[in-house]
Image (cartoon, rainbow, N blue to C red; front, side, top):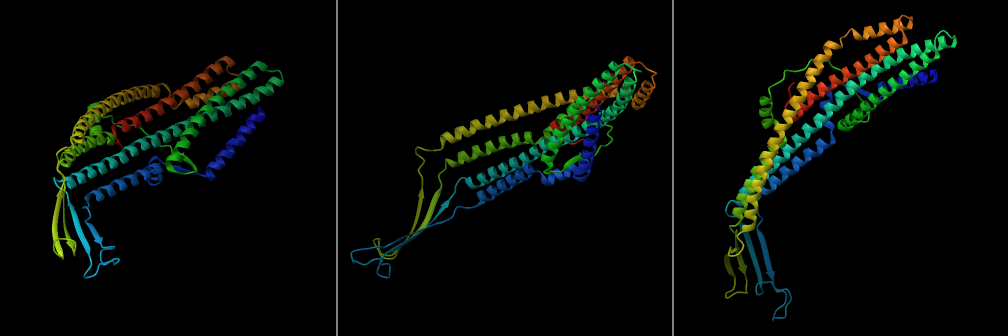
Length: 412
């Protein structure tokens, strides 16, 4: 047991030194600033917005004119490439004229697609920001609980050392020393589980901040925030949730596409001019020409019908998203109320004097003023309460973060 205690102390000191040498201490605001600058998924999403804007520029461009030529290769005069003054050559220049406002309709559709891509960026930002803040506070409370466990283990190790000495002198029962060691092992296992949670949160933080150093969240005092009504939260979500606004954008896109498909039923016109040196009924023949498709068979009926159906699909998906958000807010609001109630109750049952009482009980037990049964009962109950209070504080904070996430707004 002494060997393991010494090993535990060495590992703790080594880890502490490593953290100081290769770590950064950040507040939640500093972490968000790093996240906005360095997160790879956000950077990629920004390029998606740039790509959508480039497509919008492309749709604004007019069709290029078409130039054509026909040069004589070989004729009755047995001359190759006779394109001189007595030879033959033909030139043409054609331009496609887009009718029924199809170009403007394509531009409007591309502009709305750019808006959806921009909203997708903000929805990704909302999701990753929630993951960042949840991981941040998970590590904060896990680190705090691990520190409390470490302090309890140190107290317990001192008692074990004393009991081993007294057991060797046969002043106390060896069974009591074993009982303390068993409690040490259990408490150490609980601490290890908390450290695993902290390490998982640390991994997520490093990924989101694109860093290889340890991210050490700075603990802050937090008293909570005023809680808006559920109706206010729902109104906020309708304005702020980017994924819901994406659904509105998709409805508008389908409506714009429907107008475009109706316009596509109107054929475009190609106009042009030509010159024929010696291949027509007169020499040096200049001409104007125009062509248009005759919409006898294909009037884009299928695409128009499909676009009309897609409007209804987008509207139903939008309604479903609104209903989903309403249920998400209701569930998150109820969980927050429950977390607040449990937290407030824990504050009255586990006050700031308890750590001092814990130390006093350990000292009295060490002096022989308490029985083993009384001490173990208090020690186990205290550790359970300590863990539960920490969990209630964490769940309360995460419940607030979840409410911000489902609302899409910040309450700070």
